[in-house]
Amino acid sequence: MSTPEDPVRFAAQRALDTYSGQPGNLLPILHAVQHELGCIPDEAVPVLSQALQLSRAEIHGVISFYPHFRTQAPAGVVLEMCRAESCQAMGAQSLIDHARQKLGCDFHENSADGKVTLEPVYCLGLCAQSPAVMVNGKPHARMTPAKLDRLLAEQGA
Ligand code: FES
Image (cartoon, rainbow, N blue to C red):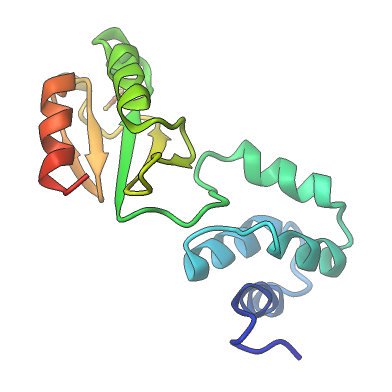
């Protein structure tokens, strides 16, 4: 029996129990694990693999296919940058390049100093005010590299 002393196994088992016997239950199980732990750690994969009779590669494939899933716990500041069409047309790529360079990481990773998690997002509903980003769930429009630097500094990042 898993215990809270092994939080990854415990979270995986709880998700498995909740969605037991439901067809196509891998996605809700992954959502449940991430909701509980903040990410889907690599150690959860063998537990899910054995219980669901899926290969580890299949589960890793699903985790990596969906941008929402992360395998590292998020940092204190989560920066989501819009990559959808309107923002792309208004310079999102150079803004993203700036963020990658400043933070020393790519999407789905934490910054070199561990303070920021960089995530892609596909439209924040602010297309008329592109490019847009979201910081810890709060949207910010008409973003520029200088504004982004200020925004991150305000967050202590
Ligand atoms: S395309 Fe970026 S907010 Fe809609």
